[in-house]
Image (tube, rainbow, N blue to C red; front, side, top):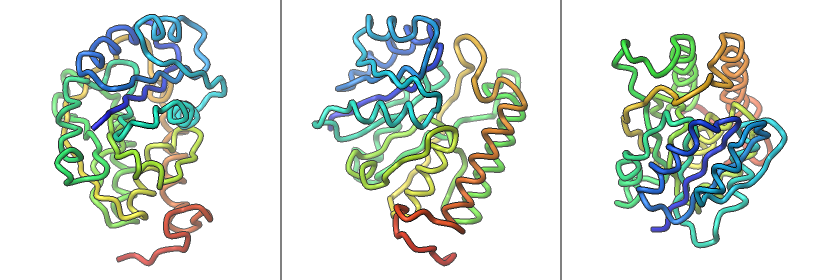
Length: 241
């Protein structure tokens, strides 16, 4: 199956080169970098390495993902999302894809490992915020959820059915909520997670950023349960199973 890898990126000039080299070694059919208003040479370096570069100047993780999706080749059958900072290891892309290739899942989420505290890849406040959001999703939708990590793969036809629209930090939660409402076969795969290659995270780099992002994620999870938008899968509020 033809695979595309999508990377939202903002000011990742130092990390984008090594990250794209690792991805290219896995030989996906398409690599798309969505430059989200970078003020450095992220876009230029990505283009020089052969990636398709699209530009979304309005800040927002979700907006960057949507811009990348609009650039997908029609032949693409599986879409992979991952961060551009090098924290997601492309060497594990075959493991992420396997459940889809074996027709056992429509949507696969790479669950980040937090086992090695000495080489912790996420700040403590982000790790605990992630656990709180995951627990909220499990409670409200009665689906397995250990992580809302960015390294994920989904069938193209399933992604198209979800109707993704969240403009910023709630993107990953929205995808998992819409997948639950749509009845997609979701699989979680534990994968190692690395510290970012350079710089500071735009979300978890500060406690304030983490709190703001966490609040939007929790609101996204709650909204689809109690105030579902008209375009949500199923449209009507679903009773708890």
